[in-house]
Length: 280
Image (spheres, one colour):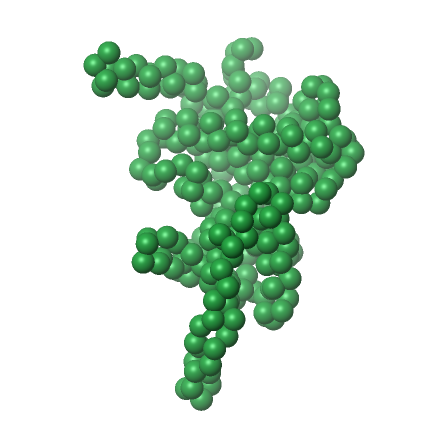
């Protein structure tokens, strides 16, 4: 089990930099050290894979990977120039997703950059939101990413609605220790017309967002083909997310409390408040 006193999200916060425009970035050399890559040449191979994933996803490499030269102090006290790369959050996210999965620190990096950090990128002021606002924001993100996941699954060979339902269940089984959608629904004590994603707290929703985004990325990145392979991939990603939660001392998703209010009720209440504030 991971030694969380050594591997935790603070190690990535400690090497974060902020430029004069208030934008956060990381230096590749410092990230290399944290991710326990001894040789720069080996780490560059991971960065190259991340750049390729960046391009495939429709993003400009130069927007996320900026080559720089900086001075470093060598043993004699003298300085010399070395190549480095300024990385955006998204670049770091792609790097840890392409890193050595056998490294325990990689799992922590995936959690940091692919869950918490990505939430904060797509949801402005995330930390200042109430629990209900976080639920709404992440639920909307899941809805968007599920469309992308469905497209990736379709390209892998899953074309029928029944096939996609089986595909989704594989992801849930991996994340929920063998429980499929029906079992999760029953476990939560929901009514027939109530959707499980609408009755998850922000932490549980975040785990499912992680599952969806990572499965989509993996299907596309590795060009996985065939229904069985796609199902297996979704299951394995779910298992890995579950393992990461466990290693970080988190609560398993099925053990998290089920909110009393559903997403639709929260949306109606929010709309009512906005209407009242607008004087309508």
